[in-house]
Image 1 (cartoon, rainbow, N blue to C red):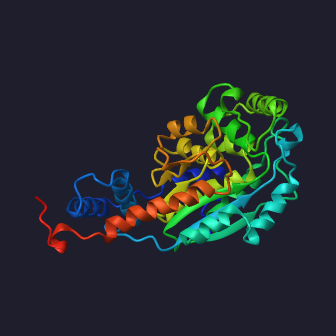
Image 2 (cartoon, one colour):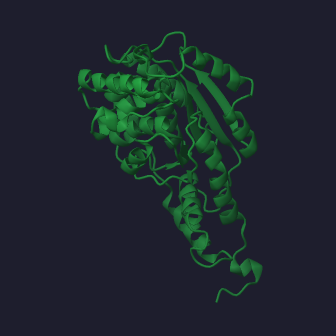
Image 3 (cartoon, rainbow, N blue to C red):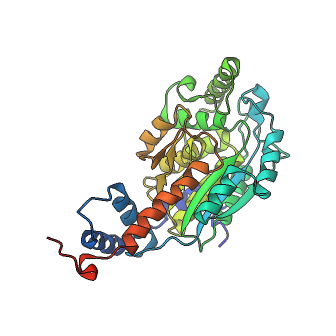
Length: 336
């Protein structure tokens, strides 16, 4: 299905009309979990994950057979402010690396049986420098949201969205500060490894963006301070909700993009879990604001969806135990 929205206003309406989890499947999964051959609660958070997943898939005994990982790539005009340790050309080069199977995310997708798709978004035309103008027009933002929505395979049973875009921790920091408050310095980190002077430039750019763009509507913040790949992730996460496909969020950039959904419509991220806590300093604060406990804490700061892709294994393990274990009755084991 093509994206059912053509403006930010109709996108918000689409979010508001999104379905919730299946209460009957949740109840069935809870009942099954109580009969499995293990002490109550012995699998800890894996039990909660399995029940959560079952609810969104509408199946008390679900399987994960078709995970999809989508990488969106974009370039940013704010890079003119010297906010990154790498030039924008690297975005194009890394897209080629993804397409040829040479990146970390390619290896993780192979390991966990995920289909991987890559969408470069107008890399030859960076967004506007948000210290001087809105990053995107409404038309550009909608086009990116639609690309993300249309990229989701309705037959997928799990979604990870990743990104590639030199300089994109800067818009992520700006979005976080605009939506959650605090100074630019509270949200701005070293990203790909900028030195002290680069961090100062980056913080200054975020502060200028916040001062210039004062509308605090979440979708306007995405348009004015975000980027095409961030908007595409937002569109994909929204589409996953439409199809009742559970989502694993990646690191700081993905979480900042997803924050615009959470702030636009209450409960818009109920179908998502946080894959990992990244090494980007403000990510913990962002996850706290989203009320998401990360599945992994491994000090990753690569992006590409890599931390979330790694967490596919955790969720697959949860579902394998939930759906594959015998009940006490099936195993002929006394349950006490």
